[in-house]
Length: 260
Image (tube, rainbow, N blue to C red; front, side, top):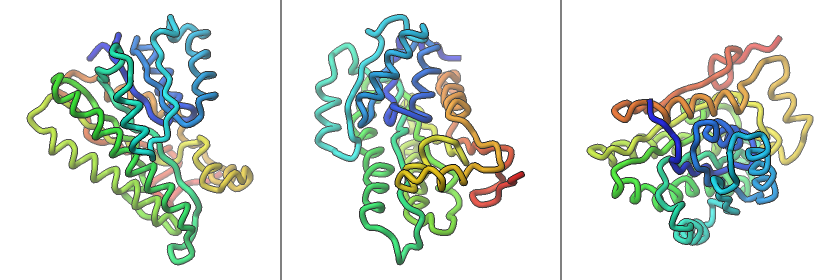
């Protein structure tokens, strides 16, 4: 088991949901956290919570980045201007992602498509491209990509979202092949139904529609997913957990769920 004490962990989409849960569990392991998200106010609140609850002994162990991963030049600037003490990133958790809309492909919204592709695919690529070379040069590192069961199984009206998560799966597999011969590890975590802001974002803030997604079943929590991410990151260096499909007991496939 690897100790995470003083390892630098960068988490995208860290302001809520799975990203925030990852921040908390990695904090318990003594990691130093770079928390990146668009909503700096939420990052500030999370950082204060980590310190006030004692998960992080000092605010000096947290570095916040107000960052939209869709903007390549801003990603480049943010990473290139990190303070020297924060540049040697040990673990990258590509968590930033979203779904917009639930429409038939021929009725889809172009803006929704672009937001999903730019965040889920291009944003992940940008972060990976700028961070992984340093891992290779230092001879250590781990990339954890948060995919989805939707990357394995397409479901009705999920077309572009499913395609973006299938891309995460393929990119993860390709990155692992390209890094063969280096000590850098690559893991893809593929959650099923997780109760976060995901459905609220998908339905453009319609809380009632979002609530119905999880009605009658017990979904995963962000902590459930973060626990699995932490497990993968703390295995012995010769062990790489390439992928994990993680679903609630009430879910058998992307579309087959048991509701009470």
